[in-house]
View 1: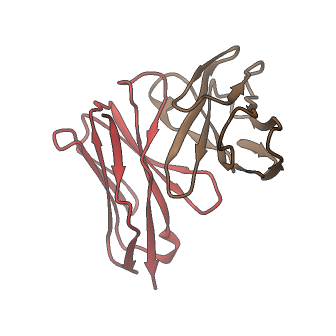
View 2: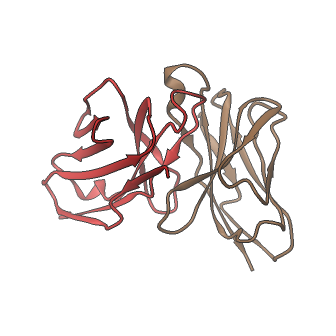
Length: 114
Length: 115
């Protein structure tokens, strides 16, 4: 069956450390993978998109990797801050490169302690 | 000030009543989407529309209906046939075609409680 899975357990880290979140998928062949941030009671906000032919993408303190062999994406936040505390969602295109439709993982809650 | 608006933020209904959730965007986006989010779960796609007067069922369309008569509006009706309607509903939009279409912009959500 097709699945997209993220760490279901919350990730608790100390301020200043690097947070690493994982997104694994099964029986999909996505053209791209996206990461979103969601704060409690609010809609998700787009962070980064990485394409299948890109190994790594960076934006300020954020870094995303995409390994199509392992069927996995890693999302890193370096020098984490308490303001980074939120739930992070990964999403992919379930039908290769068509229509903008996305399938989302269940999200990983990140808590950064001062 | 461009964006997506959803109203109301909180909605309470009695079981057996239909209810319509509003979604409006002024981003000039072609594609619009409705998702449902339950506690501890990801977003599940209810319906989506890539162009005016056309829409497709998502993964959990049963008990819901939509219309897309205008580019900027994509209302969702939760019917009495939906067995577990209490949830957080999110509307999103994207440009529609081309590489930049894949980024979705989300509204603030409507929390629906049915008792």
